[in-house]
Amino acid sequence: MYAGFDLDVSLLRYWEIYDEAWELIEDLVDIGEDGRDWNFNFWLYTFMAGGSGSAGVIGAANVLVRKLRALECSYSDLSTSQRASFAPSFRRTLTSGEWAMRNRWRPLLMMAGPNMTTYRRLFLEPIEASLPDRRLSNEESCVEAGEPSLLFR
Image (cartoon, rainbow, N blue to C red; front, side, top):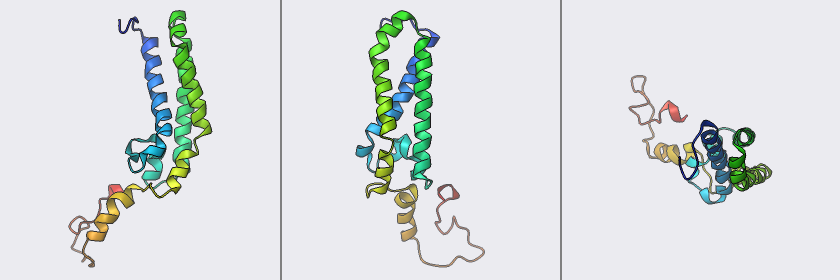
């Protein structure tokens, strides 16, 4: 028993999906505040890695839709008393999810603004600017010259 509820698989599954859906919704709500703190925002990951911002937004939106559908299914698996108890938060989650889908353009607006930067610009350009301007011989490796790892390219 936890917080007055007997824990069962359907209840635990409901809360797991509920939390996952809210992570995506909250990231979209908070996107205007993120600025350079993008590393914890699902909607921005693809853009930050140098990929298509649109693809990342579409991907995050698709995940949110799947989570909301799964939440509806898990809600229907709850007991009648559990559904009655969770109905207000369930409805609020669906309403917030609808808001998120209508506002999925917000990350694209953020990406176009001056406060957003990619991993490469944030981490690598300062490193590259501080490297000596010289040509590498065949014997010198990229690592010895201070080049960024392939992971960041």
